[in-house]
Structure formats: C-alpha cells, structure tokens
Length: 281
Image (cartoon, rainbow, N blue to C red; front, top):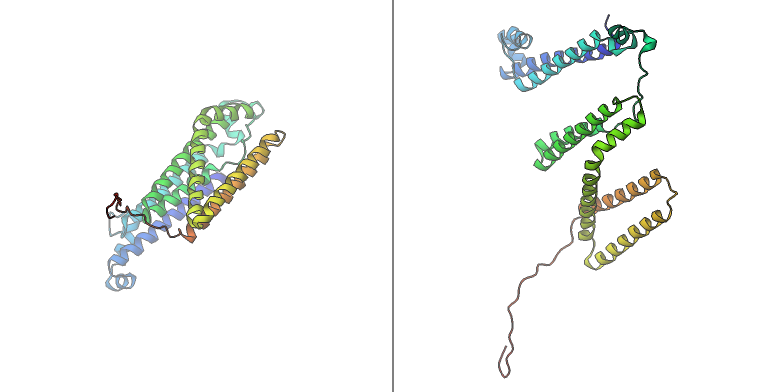
C-alpha cells in the first residue's frame, strides 16, 4: 500500500520525469530545425526515443536542464520509496520495528516552534541564482545565506530530538550556537546600520548632515535609556522596538541610496604662497 506521504514524492517524481521528456524533446527538435521540421523529415522517432533512452538512442537537446530534471525525478522516487518502506514513520510501523506495543513507545517531542531557516536557505538559493546573472557579490551573499541557514537548520533539527525535554533541547542549541551567533549578528547589524546611515548623510545637504546625525544619536540614546530604566518590560517588547528602529534606519538608507549622493566638491592642493618681507608673493 502506498502511504500518504510517499504519494507526494511519487507525484513529484512523475512531474520531473515528464518535464525532462518534454524538455529533451523540445530542445532536441530545436537543434534539428524546429518541431515542424522534425515532423516533416521523419526525425520524430529520434526526438522521442532520445529522452526516453537517456540519450542512448536518438538525441537530446540541452543536456544540463535534461539531467537536472531527471536527477530531481530520481531523488523524489528514492524518497518516495523510503516513505513507503517505513510507512511514513507512523506509530504502528515503529512499534513493529522495535518489537513493542504502540503504547510503550516514547511520547514524541513537540517542535520548538516555527523555523525561519528553510526560508533562509530558499532565499539564499534565489539570491545566488540572481547573482550568477547580475553580480558576484550577490552570488557569494547567496552562498553565505545557504551555508548559514543549513547550519542553523541542521543544529535545530538535532536539538529537537536530543532528549524528551523541550527546554533542555533549546538549551543545547543555545550552548552550541550562541557563541557564534551573537558576535556575528552584532557585527552584521552594526555594518548594516553604518552603511545605511552613511547613505542618508551623503544624500542630505552638507549643512543638514550634522543635525541629522545629532538627532539620530539623541533618539538612539533616549530610547536605550528608556529601555534600561524599565527592566520590567518583556524581552519581546524590547526586541520589537529594536527591530522597528533598525528597519527605519535601513529604510532611510535605502531611500537615501535611491535619491543619490549630493554633489561633493573636489579639493585640490593649492600652491604655497610664501610672503617675504619687502618682497612679492
């Protein structure tokens, strides 16, 4: 019997396989002059047999895309087979493997909450793909996001199953990653704020830049002083206030970057003028 979870993987495998066949047929026909030309000169058989036989007979057009789609289909098929073999990891299957009753199985540990790291990995992949076409900086930024997200995701998945105590699991994760997360996050936040503030100061007139930085410093100092005097505030409130402040500064920096920098005068070294007594300049 095909389990519910494995049906999704089998469906994805079928979609990937059919997509590979269509892609191989269309790109192969394009290399031979187009679909109409293939039908007219009798090459339709080679165009169909090529994708079906993985290029052993006939032809396949663009090999990279065809290979990616076929590889995706194979991976989904294997994952579906695992889910079918292990019955989606349901209680009855686990009890049968362990040789015990269902009631004797340990209670499942609830997850520690929603995780943003899968979204971070997906964002990093998207940024990296865009960077391949537009910018080397974006490409490496995507690589960093994928690496950081994968590391956080892996440690979180491990910590959720480390023991049966959710609080202890959260503590294990904090002990392992906090020494790295806190300094790296502090450096990134400081760098982003510094760049955003510099964009604002370069966009406003020179005479107003001094007042802008003074007002900004006064606001930051005032908010920090207020939060320090109210230790009874919840950590979530402090986090929301900090996040809103950072977003406002980053938004102002983006607006300043879009408006462009003001005209900055170039300063040239002038010739020294020596005045001598009784002489000319």
